[in-house]
Structures are given as structure tokens and as C-alpha cells.
Length: 198
Image (cartoon, rainbow, N blue to C red; front, side, top):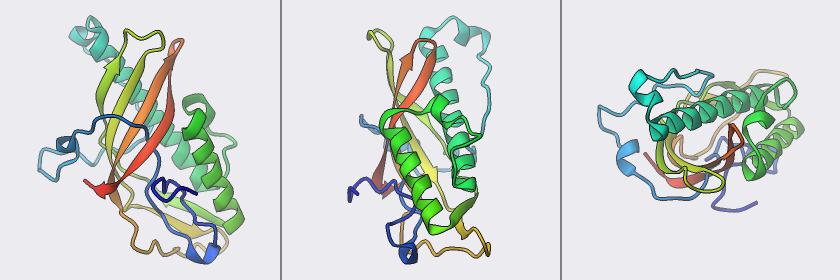
């Protein structure tokens, strides 16, 4: 397990289980996107929400692509939240939206949850922004910078429903996400948690 890459929900020892920093990618960060100012939106939950583009956005390939990749990111988090809540990927769309490192880390977390007899309750909150977009590449790529808030997303023992202590892990932190467009579908490749609050 990487020390920096603390995307694992559960540490190896069931006695030392903790919600920790999650996934992400690599690119330039915009700290203003995750500042503590009042205009910062942290109440948008990463649940499925199909975004409709405005008439002006539909004529702007950049704006349209940003809406699409953010939609995929929200779907990814909705699927991941569902999978962690049941400690199983079955019946979720996780593989539809995630691949490579993002998928393998999520599946590793789920396996750890299963072994520990733990599931999650509640939902993370998210305020993602597309901070880089390269549509001219052979495989279009995007970077999302998010301020992820997991304070309302907790672990509980599956049998008893008792909360599992989260220790001193950050509950609100920057994540940087890498995505690529494969055909008509954006895919989340990597989610890189930054060890700093937002």
C-alpha cells in the first residue's frame, strides 16, 4: 500500500479501519476551486445527474466536453458509493465509468471492506471542476480537480451497524482525477488524493 495514495477505505487490520483519503490523477490544481470561501459549493453530492447543456454550450465543444466528463465523474462516484455501501461491485455501474487504477483501487477497497465485515453509509459531497481539457489529442483527456468531503460518509460494521472510528484522517481534501474519452464514453482512469484539506 502506498503511503501517499491512501485511497484505501480500510487498512489491512480490521481493528484499525479508517475512512481515509480516496482516489485521483495528476495535473495542475486550482486551490481556489476548493477554497473555504462562501461562493464555494460543497453541497453537490456525487449522485447520478444528467446535465443538460444550454443552447450556447451545445455549440462550444469545450463546454460540452466539460459537462460530459463531469457527468461521468458524478456517475462514477454514485456507482462507487453504492458498491461500498454493499461491499460488492455487483449491481453497480462502476466498471462502466472506471478503469485502470481507479477501478483497481475501488475493487481493492471493496475487498478490504468485505474481509473486515464493514460497509459504508451516507454519501460523500463533491464540488468538481474541469481544470484541464485536451480534446485535440488522439485520445481526448481531461483533469478534474475536486474538493471531496467525506464527513457524512462513514463506515459501519455490517452485522451490528455500529460506527467504525475514522481516527484522524482528513475528511475534506483535494483530489485530482484523470479521465480519457474512449469512443463516445469518458472513463475515469485515476483518482489521486492530495494530502491537504480544501
